[in-house]
Image (cartoon, rainbow, N blue to C red; front, side, top):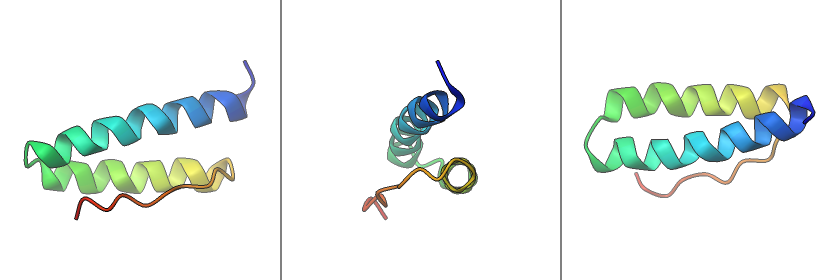
Length: 54
């Protein structure tokens, strides 16, 4: 598996975890995870759909 495919898979997995963190009220942790996902997507030029759970 190449780096881009791994990064896409990881970003998708992390997005799911982000929603879970928001649901349980771990908002500070969710904000940090959101920033990490943004960084990952920028690094590997992965388009990201913005979560509307705010």
